[in-house]
Amino acid sequence: MISPMRAFILSLLISSPALAQSAWTDAAARETLAAVQAAGAEGLIPADYAPEKLEAALASGDAAAIAAAAEASWMALAKDYAAGRTPESARVGWKSPPPRSDADWLKAKLAAGLESGAPGAALTALLPSHPWYGKLKEGLPAATDPAARARLRANLDRWRWMPRQMGDRYLMANIPSFEVDLWDGGKPVARHKIIVGKTSTPTPQFSAVATAVIINPDWTLPQSIVKESVGSLIRRSPGAARARGYRWTSGPDGQLNVTQLPGANNSLGTLKIEMPNPYAIYFHDTPAKQLFAKPVRAFSHGCMRTQGILGLALRLLEDQPDWTATRIDETAAHNETVRVPLTTQIPVHVAYFTVLPDRNGVLATHPDIYGRDAPVIAALGG
View 1: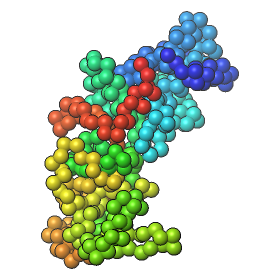
View 2: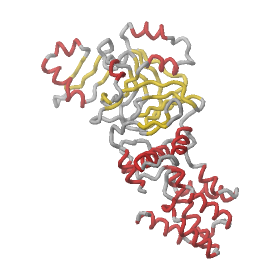
View 3: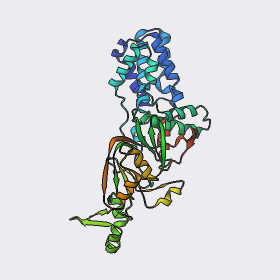
View 4: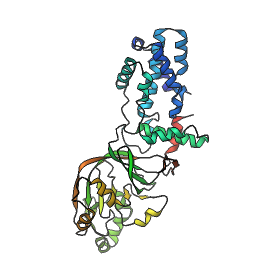
């Protein structure tokens, strides 16, 4: 069923005199109708894009009505193909701006499609081209269980929220699978386990750029951690706090500002991958390596503790061969902070997919640890 708001938008599009001036042919309108009817293959509901209005217009033979109805259906479907159907209010924890889908930009895409005589192909070009989107789409026809199908549709829509240009070489962390993959040349070339945020301090989903490897990072503690535990340790036993590497100052209001010095006790371990962002999230080492053996790894305050981070750092520094594992270890032994800028900065995408292909290309379901599937499923309907 079409929502009242979408029905209102479609009615405005159909009644717009300007749209009737479009260079629509009967063939182009029928191709658009076929594209709308095929939207179910992408996990969407064809009825949401007014195919009955377009069918009626085609049956009438009225050129102006055909152009208006075809353009309305094309634009509505194009917007959802380009940036996802789920409203931003239901994209809980997703901080990245949606891909471009403004009306002027879409109308330019439509005009190009009409000029080439291929409005259907212009629609398809708006969809994600990532191979994992294709794998989810392939799995949709076989998903006969309603819950499994709804989950697949939700994850297909999440892919439509993702940037279309992810980078030739990039990191993609997936929170529900507790893993980060390094992609290069269109395929994953390395995978590392990660520990992500607890349900009370969830890791957000966003895109950033990795800029450097930090050896022996110090750690400026978030106020949430100071208030939760470290602040009471400092007040109760300042000597023990200093022994753990904590140093602090107290503001005029009594607020403690705490930093942990580099060293064996540092919660960030010996390595950190710098990726500036508003959420102070990054990949880092950890002294608590035993937690990587847990199947569900939601223990952090939001940052992503990374197993084998030395190997990941070496891959990011491949074009700086003088930074070997030996040199990094020797540098770390001095407990001094050293920042190694990346010659080639690398995009980072932190995502939330509860269904993704495993190493063998078979779709695997992951725990919805933050309960974020339900709002998306509800928004998609059907």
